[in-house]
Length: 88
Image (cartoon, rainbow, N blue to C red; front, side):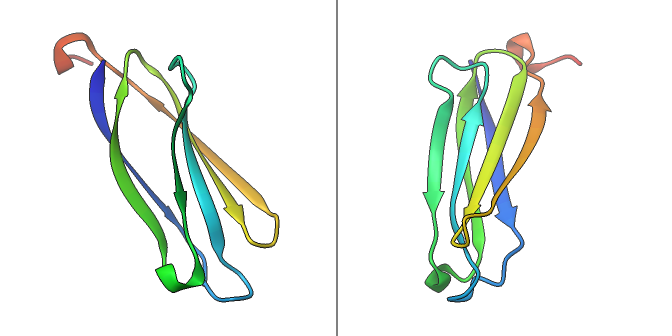
């Protein structure tokens, strides 16, 4: 598969009362969909992280953010993977 960059940023005050506890990245088409889980605390200052992951084919990549209040937010993007890294 191809290695693609992925970055997440959740707008949050990151205070003791309201902060992002975790962001899980999932690749729906991968044999093991859970790619990584980033964990945060108010001391983190912001809920921001980046990494690279391998994708074997075009698929949805999902980010799920969990707040300390129990709220959960999700965003999904379709990532196109081309053979040889070229094309459209």
